[in-house]
Length: 88
Image 1 (tube, one colour):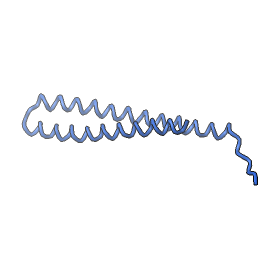
Image 2: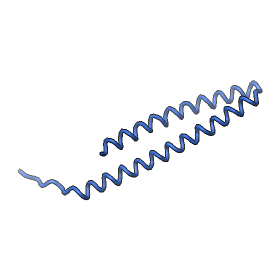
Image 3: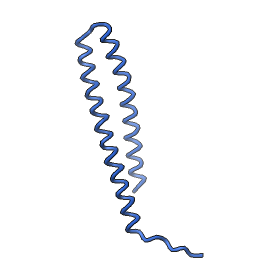
């Protein structure tokens, strides 16, 4: 069960990393279009940046919830499964 949470958590981490990379590219593109004086394109890119940051924030919240569920599941499993007796 814990491995399932780990897999989901790592895939969310990958997605967040990809979106953060996309954010850096978008910021560079915004700066480039602002220098040319193209206000329309700059506004559109700024809206895209806002949406992208919201996506990142949502994924970070999901990651936190999954980690919390994994922790609770791990604790519950430790409570319900009796410890193994050592046998020589």
